Image 1 (cartoon, rainbow, N blue to C red):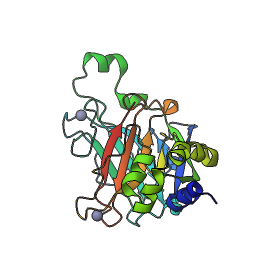
Image 2 (cartoon, protein in one colour; image 1 turned 180 degrees about the vertical axis):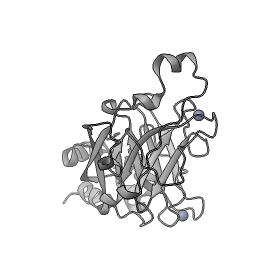
Image 3 (tube, rainbow, N blue to C red; image 1 turned 90 degrees about the horizontal axis):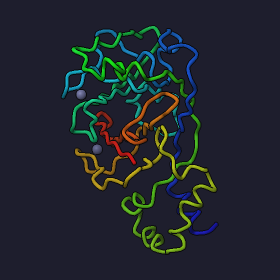
Image 4 (tube, rainbow, N blue to C red; image 1 turned 45 degrees about the vertical axis):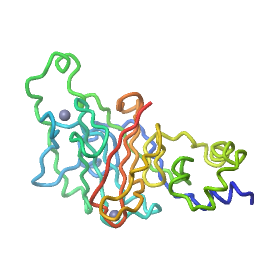
Length: 261
Ligand SMILES: [Zn+2]
Ligand SMILES: [Zn+2]
């Protein structure tokens, strides 16, 4: 095996690609309450409220829910079950400290515990809102199927997290040049800005060198990458992606970043 393949094999991490297909209904029937999906009715349990943006006070848009229990190969902490994600398109937060995004995690989500909450009525709709309706009304419900594949870090991430010897290896221009080509040969996924569970974040701009746990200072790893999906009418800026990262030892502290073209 050549050096590049050895390197790729060493750093490969399993990941699941979310494959979307338009749902047969609006996704709010009981059958789909715990399903992995974009749009439709989000899963809630008793006593919960619809997430509201901490900045503008409006309801956040339900983007997706992903059942991480159906993704065993990525070895996430047991803490995770059905993960749902909401976002405020009016405030458009770029990273974790800004309000306007919500992650909820239901470790033991079950159809019999599911509750449907209608989105709050929009208060004082502005002209554009009247014209186009709330963003949440636009998201089309798509069901998600997961496909397992080998995911590789981008070069700038490998340059931060890799072993010293491997970093030296990467200084080899030829090897460096053929890096993404080889990933494409292996998986066809070197430019993968869709929705992923686990693996490595495929950064649209660049690897954020401060992606470390604030409790223990270890590198965080990808929990979920949520891409823009035309089929569901979800677009983060210019075809952006949302990156949710975790530290395995402190999984309750999920961090969020958004990057776009
Ligand atoms: Zn907001
Ligand atoms: Zn930690």
